[in-house]
Length: 264
Image (cartoon, rainbow, N blue to C red; front, side, top):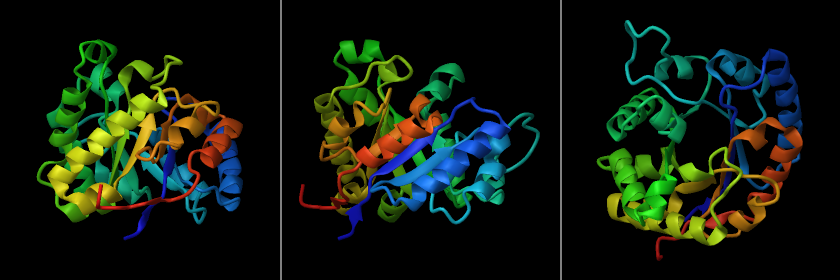
């Protein structure tokens, strides 16, 4: 069975201008030529998406959008469809990021609608999930993240789960706070998610799915997180805007590809 190659992706959120985007892309292309052990990806704001696709063409770096609208087209002022994202050359989209869930009121059903639209348009998906601080303190982490996973994955074929889905565990209390889950906390949740994926999509699919960690990922904590057997890279926020930090995370975010075993 093929190995899981860790995936280090930068979510740029609502940051940078066009000049900074082009400069960062030039550095990223150089980084890609150094062949870091992790697969790389970037998720710029919509207005720079076509520029980034062009700048990183041929580099092997994944380019995707930060969300999409579930509709194919229509009277949805200010929205962007998955088909449009695909049309400008991007290959991926993030759905369910906690900032979208909290700030834009997206429910599990909304996230699933976006996921289905993205898959139908030919995009691969990073599905984000994670608990708030109140939920962790109430010992509800397991029930929260498994419910989010089930809402996003139930009914998808094993092949789609294995080939077109990445899971990003992002504890909400660690996003933009400077806090991060300990390696033990991250591994516990990642192992739980993989076990639940096995029940939903089969052992082979669960073993093949990349499960990223996200939440205040930095050069000084990525190595310990990446050493966990079920942590397959990272979804990086602020640190992805600095090429030195992102390059360090890319290099330390994977010691080697992980065997995609089905005998867990």
